[in-house]
Amino acid sequence: MLKYGIVGGGFVSAFHLRALRQVRGVEVAGLVSRRRPESLAATVRQLGLGEGRIYSSLGEMVPHVDVVAIFAPNFARVEMVEELAEAVRRGAPLRGVICEKPLARNLPEARRMLAAVKPLGIPTAYFENQIFMKSVQAARAQLEPVMAAMGPPLLTRSGEEHAGPHAAWFWDPLRQGGGVLSDMGCHCLAVGWHALTPPGKPPLFLQPVSVSADVALLKWGQPRWREQLQQTYGVDYSRTPAEDYATGIVTYCNPDTGARVKSQFSVSWMFDKQGLRLALEVLGAGYAFEANTLRSPLEVFVGDAAAAGVRDTEAALEKSQASRGLLAVQPNEADLYGYTDEQADAAEAFATGRPALLDWDYGLEIVRLTMAAYMSAERRATVDLTDPATQRELETFVPLIQQGRGAELLGG
Image (cartoon, rainbow, N blue to C red; front, side, top):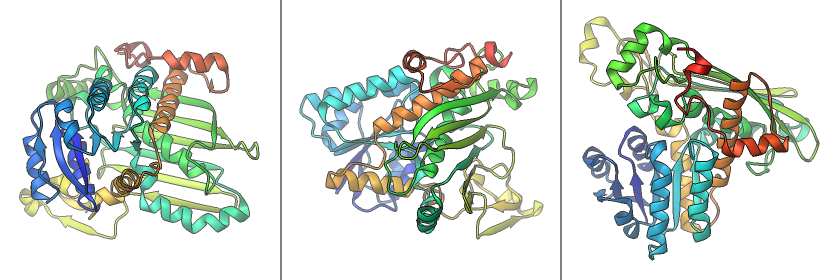
């Protein structure tokens, strides 16, 4: 039985508990958070996942667990990983460490995190749930012989949209690292890259060639919504705005054939419809597949007279925007979105000693693509990832939006 220690007491940690409930061989032995996570500890015990003991610090918890899962806010991760590394140097025998997407806010931070754990030989897992979605894995398995005959996919279109984050720090570009591109664009960059990759090849097989992207502040820059954002979360987009919409395209090269393939993405915090939507379309020569998480075999209708009895709209769907009418309901969101299978992959990897499908080196490359997308948006030009000068610039690049200077790009 692997003893997990979870860092972070917010929404993401609670969602991962729903996934861990479906994974064997794991107990949640420890919790640590900036605010004492009493509610999360109660949920751990309620779900029968373990003791869920609350520790006062990460350094105190590490000696008592086998695996540390970092689900804490982006701005706190570098210091946490360095604290974890210090505990290991003092003798704590960790079997693995997990980091939820994104690995870091920029490449300098990502490098610091890798520098902290690599010399200690700690196995790592990077959590990118969309790659583990059963719909994506099943489609690729079904089409594997087709791909062998017709060639791997040539174009992907991915999207993730909802009406906005749950917590104030997610809206704050200085603490989060940007806006929707940093928050959700990393998902689309990863799943698009994965879906284009030929079967049997490693996650970083395709080589990124170029990135072209655009960002905008649309809904949440309007006075009415900007005021609501400030009243609800204390974040002022008239002073430090972040993008609520981003789109772009990444070109990859197949090193075996020299062929170029492309991955389009579109993300937004202004999807005022049913709730969270993940969408993926994959096109090859003579074949295709599509996935859309708002399609469900279950339908629920709540009329006006009955709407007062609805306790929690998000019980039906993450980021749900309605409590009545014909509701989109997903019976097992943690499994649908890939959280269960990414947890199972990490648990098996740490228990057996094999590498996880995605590690922190992979997470660093997703950060690189995200930074390249921000650079492209700032320069209003395609970024050439094969250019040595550009590669050097990305190593120290911090987007204007992440610096709190988003008005220079987005207007204000």
